[in-house]
Amino acid sequence: MSRAEPPAEANRSGPELEDVYREFRHPIVVLGVTTVVAGFLDAFAFLRYGAFVGNQSSNVLFLGIGPAGGHPAWPTAAASMLAFIVGTGLTSRLRAVDSRWSPVSRGLAVAVVAVALWTALNVVFQYGRDNPQLRALLAAVGGFAMGALATLFVRTAGVATTITYQSGTVAKTGERIVGWLLGPPTGRTRARKGFLLGLWTLASYAVGGALGTVAQHRPLWVPAWATVALLAVAPLIRHRS
Image (cartoon, rainbow, N blue to C red; front, top):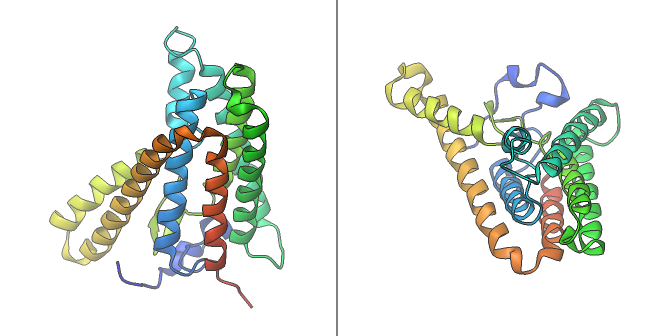
């Protein structure tokens, strides 16, 4: 995946569609780190709270199978989903406001503050182990944080990419590998780039899930480790004049 200047159309729709090649140095690394964080926190939240904080497709499914008797923690899934919506909406609005800080700086700051708050509440409430209402609250704070994080990556080198939900990534990866192998020659380079980015994203999310599972023996501090990882990508933000 060589460095390439993203096409001009990737930035025509405003800050919410800013290509991350213009926002980060080493964006492929940042995409990997943030996607690992998403998988890490999703695995932790599902195993401890019974709901995801980033994977909202599964939470929507829980809203159906829960009332039907198949998933008692469905209110926690609902809390996470609603908070994710709020986190994405508010962070997108904040990114669009004129400021001397870049949109990506503001988006990352919201995600870091929200995960830090989640860390404190997770410790105070003992990850909600004896109280489903507290688990719903904790999942909501995590969902808000992941909603903010979801605004960071929309395009990478002109290719659509996501951090917190991967169903679209799976579909696009399949589409792109077929385009690379069987498509017209003029589109094969772009299709290959998209396929490799898709594999990178899916592998990062899976690695994060494995790490989140292993981290279950220290459940109080899992969000804290995610906070550190997100802070580590801050120095890679491009500062504009």
